Length: 66
Image (tube, rainbow, N blue to C red; front, side, top):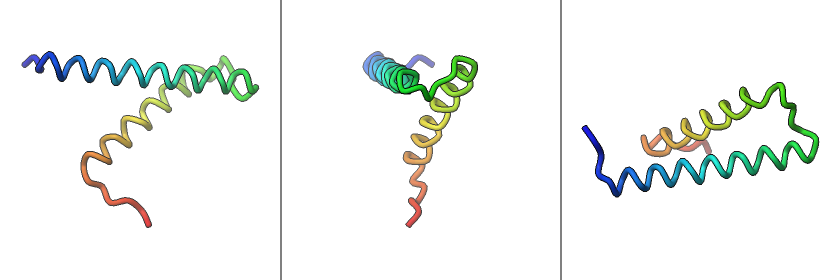
């Protein structure tokens, strides 16, 4: 089933902002000498996966650690 166009637009916007934020962070890391081209894809995938996992935990009501 297709989603509501407004919801779809919000989700697309969120993913664009996320992508831009990750790209900015990786560029800053590269300029600081902490970024290797060899590990680029693995690191980007790890960052995105971690972010999405945190969102799932937050929405599920997972209790924070004290």
